[in-house]
Image (cartoon, rainbow, N blue to C red; front, side, top):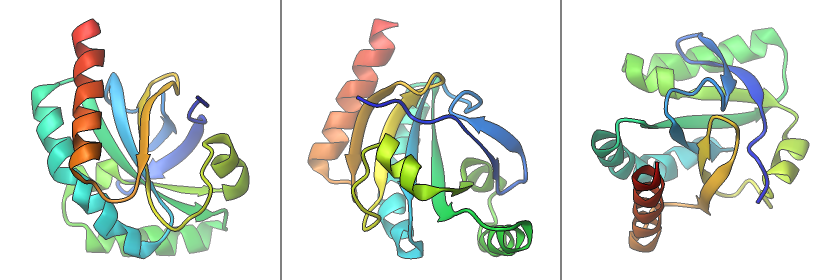
Length: 155
């Protein structure tokens, strides 16, 4: 399986961090979205991720809206719009906009298209332990729960 690429980006609180090494959890679920309407797909995962975080203190999750590389003015405009729509400081902390060359990123992660979201369970070194795509369903939920449980019980 490929490794999650190392990237430097800002969350919506304007904190600069390196992904995945500076993500808070020992393991982190990252939800990669490409289109604004993907937010409903991302939101479908939040109840499960919140529940897992309560059970496993070393687990965290992040939303990564992924947009093509653009200049500072456009980035500030887009991030400002997203920030205005998100009142929660915690949610802003978890939302890290990637302004990147999308083609190499997608190739590295074997992402075939931008028509859905992609969900990865990664460690700080970029090792991918689990991946899936699209809205959550019972099978995906059970699969992620099982993987997280095995990984935390093994350590």
